[in-house]
Image 1 (spheres, rainbow, N blue to C red):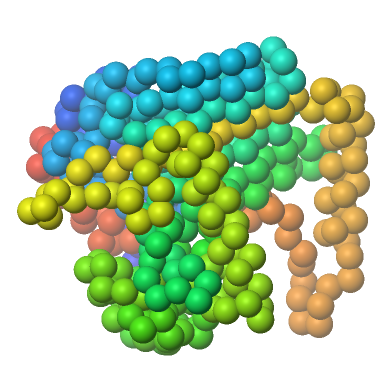
Image 2: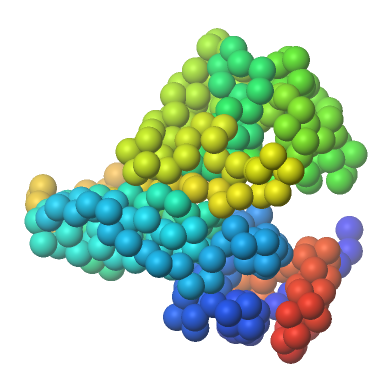
Length: 367
């Protein structure tokens, strides 16, 4: 198969996104953070959350559901905790600030946790968790999301794919970076299978009756039109394969990000007015950091992390398998490869970027 993808370099791609956001009225420091989060996703191979999402942000700014110069306020604060109100703004700048504050609290008192409410889609969860690494801290980042996931024994999507990311430093080995949704798959996986005309594996999603299906088309239609059905939690339908555990993890994220912060939860996120006009999404996030030396010496921890990874990596392989991966390895290798070879963009994404450049009136010089 001929590779028809467009390859672009990270720096020009980041600069292009910055220009787009600045033209939309986003302050330059905020524009740089949003652009960096998007390009970081593409570099790490998480294409569903990279510049393919730029259109979503442009549309949100134009609709007024994403405020370009929000008033971010501190609702409550203690030496170890805080809650911020994002003012309905773009989520990346306030998320960056929240994680920085969590890290500083960890450096001051050993651990820090900050929640955010009245926010929007914040990109890849791992970006914020990894901010803790250079400070010899362990970082955690979570967010709730649009109600696409069906609760165990339920019929309709009631909560989001609700990702969890945790990052911990190592010594000679790469950091451990877990960045996972609490659903079996994200919606983007269904979109890929639908474009290819392929059936999805049984256990990924349900139809409007709550029955697992292999046809992605009606699932996507239902998700778009809130017609019932949706994605399944980790473990799939029912309890036999642990679907109720994935369901519980998704609810844990919803509770920590939304119920705790005062954001919208479950199917209350992404509301619309009686005429169907989108209102601010009021998403919630949770960020945390804890200092390793509050538990044991950093050098000892990192040495143990190295040994832990090597034991896992050199464990006996299943028949036909050549490698056991540690979480984060594939993404670090993608960054190395894509920094060397360029970021591959789907032709439709490249075309959409060109269209955005024309609409916003900025130069397009990526290809």
